[in-house]
Image 1 (cartoon, rainbow, N blue to C red):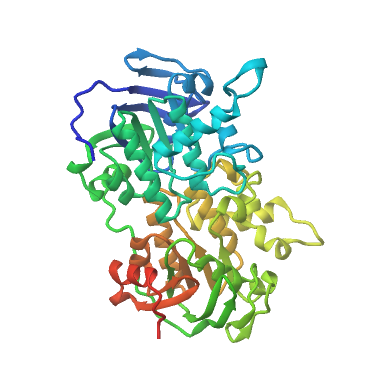
Image 2: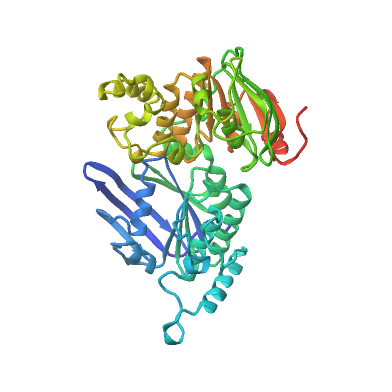
Length: 505
């Protein structure tokens, strides 16, 4: 890590930035200074103003007030093209590359080197692309189409493009949300090499372990305003959380002891070649069972097979003593299963539809009379769960796509809880949501368990697994390698089972 003392002048500086959208105040005091040769974290709850600040830096929005300087000169970007040409690159969670073009063509789009007779110099492009990847310490074939590349490789291509433009400032907005551990480490190695070249980096993440591992300095925002800036070495997770939410969070994991009842779900010998093998476990009423393991271990595939979305070759799944037929989600729902998927935006919600319509999606047939559903009936059902889950939306007819990630997650939960399930499967329940909302989701899961709901929780966050689960089932390469009771579960025991192939007895 570079020296956290920063004698040099900031490359980019924002001071007292204000931004409103109609009657909505997004920023009242956006303040941030990025220095050369430093990685700066920006943290805050959803709605704190981080995204608005980034969009002003990127030229998507124009500020209403405050000062914005780049290398000491006041700037007023009115387009993303102006921001890019000034030396600012933004790497988003989901890159927007042209899938049918090659890696090289994406890097040099709109500025291809030209040789005689106006032809594109493809050899020069290829050589320069190879040089960029070598400089970044990664191996990507410059000639392959970008379609089919992992999110991690697509992000690296965006970074290569930024370096080829000699970007002074790189903004990384939630870049690790869809990456595996190995991919995160590779991205961090690239980020550190860029810092060591003297570039200024801004890193936005909800994952504190990444902030402390990668960054030199952290700025905290709350409710559209600057709160503080500190060297990473001089602060703690507890202090950051306290400043982010404006209060002491007694516990991010408000686990309540729940009475454990009868077996609700029994999975026996579940096998799908190439995905998972001989999966055996049960879940009881009032119990939260975590499926832990590394990304790609097979946890989501097991959950989807149980629910009937994905196939399995052999084995049985029973709920409350009744066997669930294969590949039949409708039957699974009718028997009391509910699945909150990992990708809530693509698989859990209709983003263009209202809160009310999304919250009643799974029970529309039950609400209909003579094939019709009135708005009053729809709203009454949606309001019950929106109130219980404390969904923050101006109205039930608000488009779900306009809500924060945390509130979108609550709407997905509302949709499935409205079916009155016996077993709830939640895949990465708090991915991409802020710390305050994480605590709310954890509280809700705990309360549902107390009410007798059986819960399977799939999570890649070890603190979440350790904080919420009554039992931990660790999956490694499609097999359950350990079953650990809450009292015995530690980060070490879970990670050992997640990276070793000894199968639980």
